[in-house]
Length: 171
Image (tube, rainbow, N blue to C red; front, side, top):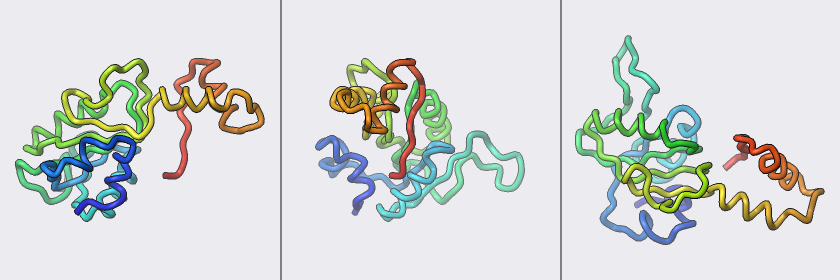
């Protein structure tokens, strides 16, 4: 049973994970370093084991790239905090599949990419993001008449300067 955290990652989209009973992930894995805390919370709430993937293999101790107990053929859900180009996820997918794990779904909190026609796949994998630039732009449009709102000011700076700035908040 996959409880609130995993389902809330997909509550914006009523398809894919929540309604697909054939998806049976065995592990949650977070992309270092920003998504590790989010992925560990989702794993805890979902009663699924959490795997830690390193940016690079340790040259001492266990010499592992992925820490945790798993078997080849296990299905993982990847969680990332922010996608700009997707390169971090792409690099880690290579590492994950080299270890014999199967990527079942990718979830991100925020997708910075704009003008994307297919937001349901990333590198041919099932993909869901909670928020994207279209959401931010819609929010900005709704708040444009309220310059006293602090969020309006942040969004105005992002749009005016064409900044790569992203805001952070507790989830």
